[in-house]
Length: 216
Image 1 (cartoon, rainbow, N blue to C red):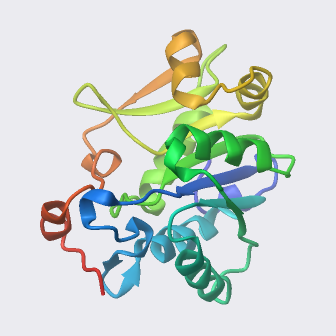
Image 2: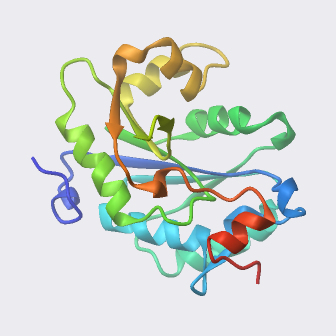
């Protein structure tokens, strides 16, 4: 089966999505990255609408800092999407991204086959980038359970994980995705690509200017 925007509507391979949107954005002067605007839409809206093409069985957003503002935006997005979007709040987001990842994994409820773990501050991740990852997952060889994009030797995001791997991660208290990949490189398929979208994210005011974003 070739996975594409059309064929992925077939329920044979069930996609779940975990989106991390709990960060403080301290280097942005305390502005939520998920609510940065590109071409009149928030990054959160652009991503959540783009994944609708793949008909995910579950979409879960982890909030933390700015949870109230992000939830308002998600409620607006829900009116434009056909698949449900759930929210879980990290009560201790100051503990870092790993705490949000673990909470998100523990909060998934669906019977999925593959999980996309994504960040809220990658403005150029869209349908084609997700589709490319899913195609790689469809082509993985024996024992490969993770698809990690690599651009010029640098790790990118989002990353795809099989349900089997997520179950293994969950079996170890406190374990999250990146240290698991470091511990089990034999399970990782490196997706070598020149697509800079997998690397581009927003950390500073300079990034906002460079990527053509706005805070309004």
